[in-house]
Amino acid sequence: MVRFLSWLITTAIALAVATWLISGIYFDGPTHGMEEIKHKLVPLLLVALILGVVTSFVKPILTILSIPFILITLGLFLVVINAAMLGLTAWLAGLFDIGFHVTGFWPAVGGAIVITIVTWIVDGLIGESR
Image 1: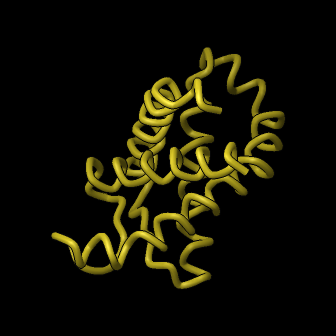
Image 2 (image 1 turned 90 degrees about the horizontal axis):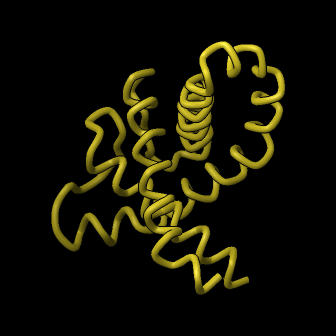
């Protein structure tokens, strides 16, 4: 249970940083102060959960099917796959009316890169407690 919670919080932090840094990734609602935190905390955790499910079940299938592209691009195609996972997460969040949006391919690529880097950093900081 502790491992799941640390993973969920790590993913939520990475998503929050991506929404802060990438202009094409955002949540609906207030944009400043405590009202923003109150309004967006639960949606942020829900989107982190959706992203985790998508990454766990869909990404391995896409990765296996994309092995030739991954090899040709020396692994850079994995960024495209991660961007697709973020886009799929936004689409699923829209189905559940969560209010999370990714406005296009390039914001998804930027968000995927930011989420990967922030996850590495946060995992490095709290990795010992897992």
